[in-house]
Length: 256
Ligand SMILES: Cc1cc2nc3c(=O)[nH]c(=O)nc-3n(C[C@H](O)[C@H](O)[C@H](O)COP(=O)(O)OP(=O)(O)OC[C@H]3O[C@@H](n4cnc5c(N)ncnc54)[C@H](O)[C@@H]3O)c2cc1C
Ligand code: FES
Image (cartoon, rainbow, N blue to C red; front, top):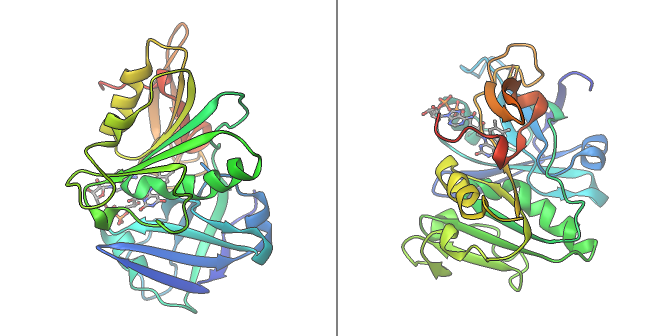
């Protein structure tokens, strides 16, 4: 992995309700990135009051154009600052980093996304579709405003769910989990991922989760993302940015 690259924002989309996308052009990144990977992104210009980089998943990739997207929700200072940037501004980007979602399987893949957790499944759903693999995507949020990319996603393969019933099915994504033997890939609030793990834990279905740990370096140096995980003979400490962010759900100590 090389160092930070200075990349220009070539496009920006404001989705409303605090959701934004930023687009960058870089063939090397677009060719090598895989869903689950993430980037550390910082703004080292004088305009920025935020010093540490922030982690963001890869969202869509338009490989033929060398363009990739990050999709984020404003939750604090860093994301607030990124949301104010405009086309032409330059950010520093490190990555792709981390591991990725496993897709080598003969089973049907079920992707489950909550809110901004849709990011990795935008590109992944296109990859598995191109490979002719069997999959569905269950994608939910609190209300209509939390469910985006509706026209981009394959409507025949996607179950949209909102808690208030304002769009798609009414309820929680966890109420739409299918019974059977699948490969489950999930990203979103921890409570959602925990419920999904519990739903399948006594079955043959394997569940993989992407963790949103706080990260300062993203490269294994600072130990800021250290987390205890379960192993066959006890527990061990891992750095989520190195061994993750994607883990088998049975490795996670959910009640800590
Ligand atoms: C591997 C990875 C991929 C991610 N991908 C995306 C993505 O694609 N889109 C997206 O919107 N966000 C993503 N996140 C989360 C994103 O990094 C945080 O929302 C962001 O760093 C918050 O920065 P801030 O300065 O705006 O918030 P801060 O001012 O630092 O914090 C604001 C609030 O958010 C909470 N918070 C901050 N960081 C995290 C975190 N990592 N996990 C949980 N809570 C946090 C804080 O506790 C606080 O309550 C990802 C995180 C990781 C680790
Ligand atoms: S963020 Fe520094 S070690 Fe993981």
